[in-house]
Length: 486
Image (cartoon, rainbow, N blue to C red; front, side, top):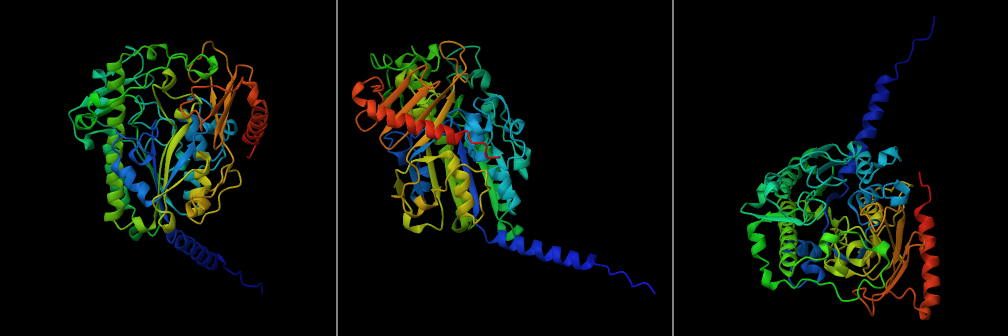
């Protein structure tokens, strides 16, 4: 008689169920993540020492966590910056250095930060702009999103889209997202895209509470402001009377020692009147305060839902923003105002460092490994950044000797149609920048003596040894940023 076949399927199913149960149990014990990204926000915030801007809720978050004084975007343009911090790779490794293209064309198999959390049992959702969107054109759409990153997405759209025909715009006929444009609206916060987005986020926090789902969450809230057009409720404009605003004017001879390659070509922004400057800055600050109020709603929801004790909160911008320094507005260059970003990380597990500030040099590519470590998940081997958890535990700790940034001259036309990169490192004291390996100019600024970058020391023979050292360090970082990690 033939032996009776053994049916292994029931045992396999039981084993699989046990494995899944253990995995879900392990995931359920992990912290949640609320990842808040803003668009085009510089460090003009109360907690960063700005005397005029009102940002009480972002400041409240800073009091809960660690505020990073020296964090830098890897490319101060929306698409390359967001691609970089979401993939954990440098822009040269993603092949995304302008607002054109999608990283999946070049690195189709990369596991993004959001995907990584999905793969580890998290509920992962996006609201608004996390990957690149054309603003305002793509508001309400998926934009240049990455579908594998998310389990659920919401694309808010509000009154700011409806009022676009009424915008004040410096260059009539130009896309309002690419030039200076603004409008104050007699409206409520909850009618604006960012207010609607915050409402979605609060709803999703409640619906996906780990007590209800048995899973931790990674919720990415992407605010659209203060990106142009600066559209905000009228009452925020009232917070910033124009007479209280002291606009930055172009200093005589400021541009004389700056290479042409370093200056985005926006001629219509050079001759703004004082009143125009005040109106633009007022609208930008009003937009910051609109976002700040929505951050406050999210923090209140975490408290009300008793989620704050087990949720890591990140607040970050994709890059900085100019409001007149060097005659520049907006971004896409390698000066401090464009490359530097606000970053606050509030971890409920690092009590000793709450409310502290760190001067540790940090890059946005460091977010991926940092959040992975805080949540007990090993970062994938391709990730190029470094975890800043040691800094959260000891804000006096340093993890980098310099921060690295690049920009592509095609992003904003310079004086001709040349195609080359500018590369820069920021140390504790200096910034050293090369345009097309130095063939289109070099820059050296000493922030200890010249915080506003008025004097380019690159051609001063007294600094030859320093220049040689910084050149070597820049080229080392350039080599690291071009290593194929996939």
